[in-house]
Image 1 (tube, one colour):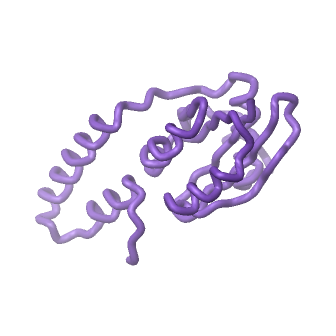
Image 2: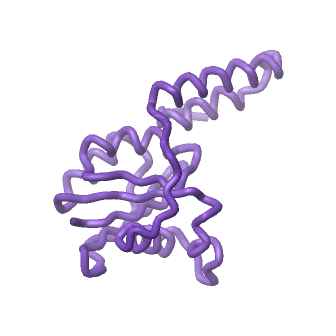
Amino acid sequence: MYYIGLDVHKKTISYCVKDVSGQIQQEGKVGSTRRELDCWMKTLPQPWSAGMEATIFSGWIYDHLLPHAAQIKVAHPLMLRAIAAAKKKNDQIDANKIADCLRYDFLPVCHMMPAEIRDRRRTLRYRHSAGAADGADEEPCLRTLMETGVEYNK
């Protein structure tokens, strides 16, 4: 089994791939698009499981990676104390620590709702925020695009 820690951001995803013994097999960054994730997944050793912190982008990445992985875990951001309390902090170190937490089965997992429920909640949030702003604010649209992983030009 190979363990992958993912530090997810709007434009890039930092990753760290470790084997069972903890040796780093791959490290780097990949773009936060479906196309780039597909190309990256072809280079991964098999079988693999991944862990990532829960963010606004986690839902579509989780859904996209799930069919290809043995397991995907999403960590509760407030409970990831090992990353938050670190003196040295960058994306690569965070991905490395997430991979270690996953490898030791120490990742504080949060529940991922099924895609249908997340879609329904997103629709209700959009309706509520768009109605409150009388549709004048572009923020609800951008949030929806980011949550679903749709590429856009601002």
